[in-house]
Length: 403
Ligand code: A2P
Image 1 (spheres, rainbow, N blue to C red):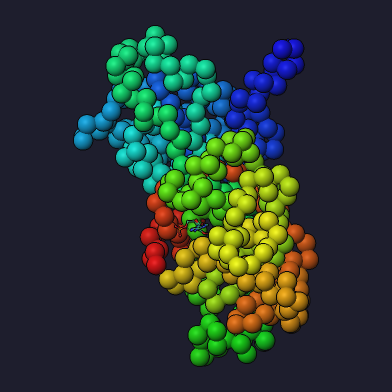
Image 2: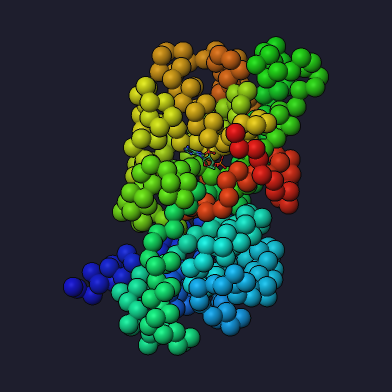
């Protein structure tokens, strides 16, 4: 192998957040928790240091070794993580920290769940990385490399918990903090302009309002995802059809932890959901499951990527997944030649043509696409975590009702 080819090969093994400039810029504008996962001696600490070096002032490493937490299969009491968790919380609270790197084996599901809860609470996107060293699963070699002096037997006991891929509730593009804040504002402006529209006030019936003076769309769409995102593949931690295959796709492995710019072409509201339509690029379509549209509308045919969206809010007792279905309803009407009735223009930060479709369905075709930076990763926590639309940055977390 030539030295350039060897360098390219090595770079290919390194995660995008180390080697891709666009990703580095996106991570700096995000809130990311990197969980390094792997057997003791597999190369996690080296990777942690490399990442920390890259981000310097805006990153913090937390190592389980510092707290002398020995990597073993937990007994019911588990290791003592209380001091480490204090440090983690204090990192999450620091404004200047965009990247927290947690160096531990992360073999224990209970421990992982605690971390996912904490990351959600502070609205950090989780990225799980594993070192790609050739010996990472070779217990005989690891026996000599791990400073805990774990025996071959102990390593062999740990190995099965770490050799299987950790599949998330869903894979998707998670918005960088700055762009997320700005899109939340845009969503508010859209809803405010919509409810001030005369024609909207005349067509309140699908929204169940009898008195137009009580109209408050921000309250109506009271739930909003904890971190705004565009779902690519819903995996249900591996239980959903095709999720293992999806996790193994070369494009997914390559795209994981990479920064992408999403292009929003329209905003829409229905009596159930408010969302943003996303136009995926060729590169992003490689991460889009072939059956994503058929999954929810098996009888119809849509161009690939038609369902791509960002849920901005949902009405009471409506699940987020409804937003993509609502978007396909708009596209279905457009395909049948019913473009919607043009009822005027919105001006200001959310400008474009506003159209009315049937049954309380409104769509704003933006005069200029909105670009938002995002990181492609997984959401590993519990389902249904959302914050109230007006909750602000420290909004209370609550479990929304799962129908
Ligand atoms: P969306 O991507 O439209 O916002 P929940 O919290 O309700 O379990 O859902 C978690 C996330 O996964 C949400 O973002 C949701 O919708 C998406 N989602 C839920 N169920 C599905 C599904 N069957 N197919 C695709 N995405 C889903």
